[in-house]
Image (cartoon, rainbow, N blue to C red):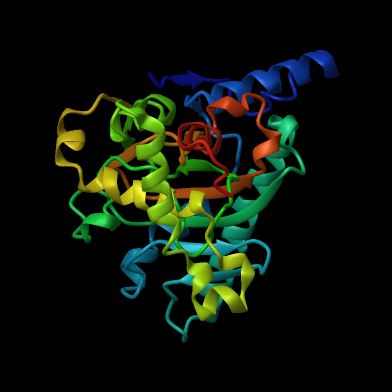
Length: 312
Ligand SMILES: [Fe+2]
């Protein structure tokens, strides 16, 4: 079962007395993440100015168009998603500056903390999540309060792992999650145990038949083409949310993420749901599959061994 590993706050990667100790500890942190644990820093190592945090918390009231998450694209240094009012360029510029600062701070920290992964990841989006998660009226497949594993419809990973680093910037309220049992033990329950390989292969091959690669968009932009793995992971995200029995009776654990904390987790293999909380920042990384210290835990290896064939 997943567990939360609580770590010292800032400088956890810098307190070691030698480079070798640092490396051993970093390997252990990678192993814990890959096993499905959440690494929690009760005091976030990412420092943002209090006035910037207050600015972020005040955005929803001052900008009624801000009705969903804001995505910051580090590589383009721009914000996608909901826009602030166009007549407030100073606020837009300040928002960009704050999200840029958070993203860079998170990347710098993770570079020092998870050294086995350094330079082995693709930097994905950062986000600001301003809304209260409890009671959001969303379509079933978009609900955050149902257990799911992450997969991105527009950004296939081809087996790269989705590592997410979060920070709760609410001044007083914890972010309440539940997490389910690991992908490695969950997936056999979703694919019947009798003759698992043929059934899994059939499921995966059906998923592969509808890849974006067959569309004109996929042909024009190869990076958008989904592998069989991506198609399966997208479908698995939906299957979990659609499964009322799993949502109600599936094994899960409550996790409380306190105000001011940061945590990281592989959200492609740890089923998770956000029951309540608002004001969170997040940075996503896509970590190369061959950077894993325990590759047998990765969804790609688990699925390929079940299917008996390559999926990317
Ligand atoms: Fe998620």
